[in-house]
Structures are given as C-alpha cells and as structure tokens.
Image (cartoon, rainbow, N blue to C red; front, side):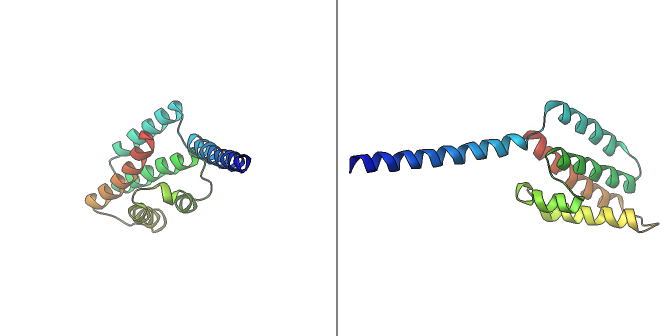
Length: 134
C-alpha cells in the first residue's frame, strides 16, 4: 500500500508541475518586451495629440490593435477582441468604442461630439494601460 501512495503522490506532483509550466509559458508569451512597450507608448502619445476627434478615435484604436497583435492575437480587431476577451477588464466598453470607430471609418461625413471621442479614447487608453502594467 505504501508504494501505491508514493506512486499517486508522484502522479499528482507531475500534474501540478505540468499545469504550472503551461500557465507560466502562456503568461510569458503574452507579455510585452520593453522595446514594444516604448513603441506603443510613442504611438499612443501621437494618437492622443491628434486634434480632430474622429482621427483621434481612429488612431487610438490602431494602437490597441497593434497591442493585441503584439500579444499574439490574430485576425481583425473584432476577432482579436473576441480572443482576448477574458483578459480584458471592460470588453463591452471596448466593443462600444470599436463600433464607434467603425461608424467613423465607414460612414462618410459622420461627426461626433468631443465628449464621445474622449470616452472612446479613454476606453482604448485604459486597455493599453492595463497591458502595459502586466
């Protein structure tokens, strides 16, 4: 009976070790290198400096799209959002900002209030900041 306990203990230990290793690999893969953080920070500084609210929203989403791509998410922005969803704090707000961006990009002549642009840019900025800290 003693050998059975040691065998089970060994199996459980291996399973825990394997789970820890997989978690470590996944976490490590989704982190941003310092050089990429600096590049994204420069892109963000440019995006928020744009005076036109429509272009500011477009540029802000572009930075988050680059961020998600750098983290290994592939596809359109919507596909990246879906894949990254569990890691995002407020995915609904991000979807709203993305829908606004799509309206601005695909409907000619659409104008928005400064407050609406600020809300979308803040949402994109919060997402960027969350990943820059991790």
